[in-house]
Length: 243
Image 1 (cartoon, rainbow, N blue to C red):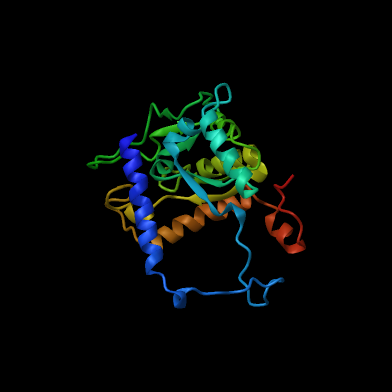
Image 2: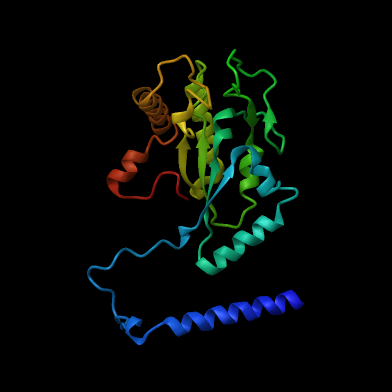
């Protein structure tokens, strides 16, 4: 109690000293206009606060459908109450490039692939080291209604079925999250793919190859997962995945 008393006294002294330094000439007076000025900036989206969850730790923050994380839920609900809308969460990070979607994996956690693709490279973590299934999306649905997600997709995965893998993940995310899916993020920090995240060590990896691989995967998602979106944009209607 004594320490708290001294702390409050110190704060009061600092505020008093600061106020004594403010001169009347330093005070700026202004009038708030009654209407929006023509040169005013756009109104900030109330969802300006965003959060990121490392892919491998998703269930730590969400819990499961059987046992949701009430701390996370209450925190998001309080933010939504203050802002008028829940925040947006990015589910990704380094481990999104180590994880692949398997529809038949029904466990409520990020699992370990029993047969990952290995390479004789120091520090290498396989790009299919982890697996997840539909329970991941069900866990995200334990967050308050209206919470949106930026979902991370695996760009590092390079086996011959890479298009099948990434479109399966994108399709599952879209089907489960629906209008709560804000966007996809294909890959995480690809500038490190030839160094500290050595997915491309020994390959000709740089800006052009990154763009080529990204466009290849994004085009497949566009054509196979969102086949009607260009039409939706053309006629000005809601996206085809909207309810």
